[in-house]
Structures are given as structure tokens and as C-alpha cells.
Length: 292
Image (tube, rainbow, N blue to C red; front, side, top):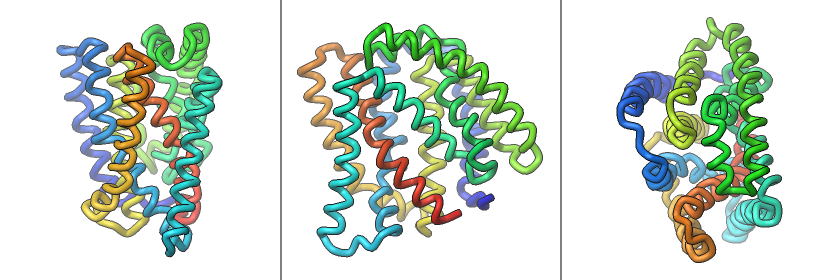
């Protein structure tokens, strides 16, 4: 197994310290759905997107991107994959949503793969996706209804509810096996389960994606690129600004096509993430394999 970088270990302690306070806060002051949706975009942009904005630097570490043409080919391929996902979502939103959940589970398992391996981290990745439907199945169905047809949304939410029960059981077995060599994973998983039981799906998503996955991935990638966090942050700006510009264009288009604010916001966030995750996940898989 890979070593745990020093800053990743510190992030684990910080995550474990912050989340209980957040859960206590949300037990007392739970914002309405509209306020959750309003906060979603800025939080994902500020805390979630930077970890993927290192992808160009990752590609440069993998391949000799020397000339302007080399960089253009990479960017064209990256954006092309993202556009293909958006097109699939337009043509077959139900299939696109199901695929997004599946490959996201695989990608999110990467948060723990270095310590417990693929097969034992995979149930954890599946849990990350399925846990919100354990208690808030109807809420998940409502949110999915903004992304695909209602019958499909209800079906996928029901499948996630059943998957969550199985995933918790299998994950618990994996955590017992790894309790001594990797105790912090058990702490993180317990906090994620508690968050899923206490808070609605969008808040759970922000806690996991913005507070665990994104900084964890960012710090690990920066370490493997031999960059300090500050150097890595500086390296994200070109890609981050480009992504936010494309998101702004998409938001304007959706605002015209979809007057409902809630639907337009959820579509730009989650379809945008789905589109960016495919090239990001493929690039990450190659990069991680090189650094194992």
C-alpha cells in the first residue's frame, strides 16, 4: 500500500473534528431545500472543482506535452469526452444518471484505495453514493427528478436504498479487517454514515465532496506531483477559470431552456460534474497506477 502523505493525515484529523460540529449545527438549523440549492453551486465551485483543475498538470507529468499542439490535443480530447457525456445526458438522461452513479462510486473509492486496495475500497465508494437514500429515499427521488424522468428517478432512488443496506454491511466487514492498519478510515466512514442519517442528500453531498473527497484528492495529487499545496493552488487557476466560464455559459443556456431555478441549478452542477468526472477519472486512474 502507498504511504499516507503528511498533509493528508492532517486533513483526516481536521475532517473528523469539523463534521461533528456541522452535524450539531444542522440538527439545530436545517436550511430549506431552496437555500441548500442556492449554496450548492458556490460551494462546489470553491471547494470541489480545484482538485480536478490539476488535471492538465497531471497530464504533463504523464506525457511529454511540449508543443502548443500537444497541449491542444490533450485539451480537445478532455473537452470532447466531457461533451460526449452531456450529449448522452440529453439523449438518454436515465442511462446517463445511472452511469454517473456507477463510475462515481468507482472514482470515490480512490479516497481509500491506497490503504486498503481496490476491492476493499470499492464498497466504501458504493456507500458514498448510496448512503443518502438509506433514510432520505424520497428526497433523493425528488432531486433525481430534476435530472431525469420521474419514474426513472424513483426507480434509481429505490435501488440506491437497497444498495445502501448491502454496502454498509460489506463496508463494515472491510473496516473490521483494516481497523488496526487503517483506523482513520473507520472514523471517516462512521462520520459519513452519521451525516447521511442526519442531513438531507444535498448537505451530505457537500460534506463528502467538498470537505473529504476534493481536498483529499487535491493533497494526494499535489504530493505525487511534488508540489506544495500553494504551488498546486496556483497551478489550478487556468483550468478552474476555464471550467467556471463554461459553467456560466451552460447556466445561461439552461436558464433560457429551464426557467425553474432549482432544476437549472441542479442540472448545471450535477451534469457538469458528470461530464468532467469521466476524463478526470480516466486520467486519475492512469496517474495513480504510475505512482503505486
